[in-house]
Length: 364
Ligand SMILES: Nc1ncnc2c1ncn2[C@@H]1O[C@H](COP(=O)(O)OP(=O)(O)O)[C@@H](O)[C@H]1O
Ligand SMILES: [Mg+2]
Image (cartoon, rainbow, N blue to C red; front, side, top):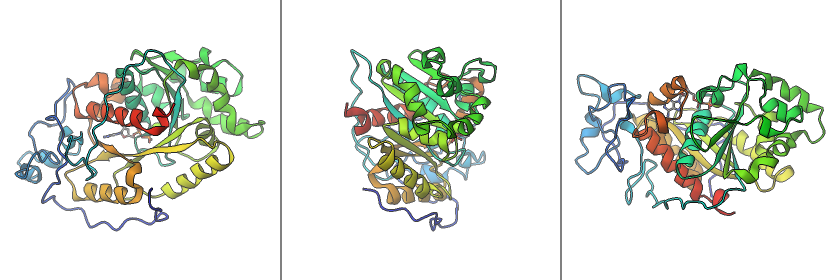
């Protein structure tokens, strides 16, 4: 479905310039602000929210005295879907079914959030997609598989102080149940990690079945959960191979920046190798555009490029750049509880619907 990617070739974008027009990427609802609303949103530059041909309000953003329009941290660039209209990716936004309530739970489908580039939104997406899925009644287990422990910290778990982490389940034979900890979000559990995990690759190298260690560790609890999300570290090393071997699907977050596609070809090769040699059920669930700023020509060009490169594999949901996400890390909670009415929270709820509708999850 997707076209082959230019191998690390930077896309030929024009130079960023002041936006002159904004495509119709209207949020379905007016950008609602959550309690933690910050950063000068509200002056309504409406970039991207062209709710009509007179969406001339959008581009003017930026000419205002407060220059909020070019503030990438404002929620105004939100890319919530415009039902029956074009989504932020320029394609018709599909009508996503409301996820049906579940009478019983499990067995879980496992998704790895993977990109060997750091800072692209893997951890943020794991936390917020996971939290959004719980709002639809799904039982979710988040696996922090990065020695940085950002996922654990982002959920308010002081991972450095923990006695037991994923390392114990991976290499010490400890039952994963003894490592799982509840978070403040009902239905959202966590397998924490900390810097101790950085030794795991070296120890794993000499293990038999070294790529299957995570799958083995997770197996006993899969019947209890509906979705397991593995937050990978920014590398294609043995830990990431373990995540891909344990997964049914891969979700690839890509930052809407000039070099977004760099390295993606390599990641796709790794996924193909895992599919061929270790885990034939692995599929790419989707590519998620993150940190999108609809008000810059640059942002829109990158998004156009992602549509060209990935076609139907690009999620319709696009995550806008907003300062709320860094704020949630400090708060130690997902955006769905920190700023429940924010466009960022809405976007991850829409992503949750897209993920639940995807074949990787729904073909159970
Ligand atoms: N949509 C977004 N808008 C603004 N900042 C974001 C967004 N998503 C993530 N961030 C911030 O960017 C940084 C990197 O994100 P993170 O999810 O940790 O990436 P990764 O796990 O891929 O390294 C974090 O400080 C995070 O708060
Ligand atoms: Mg991370």
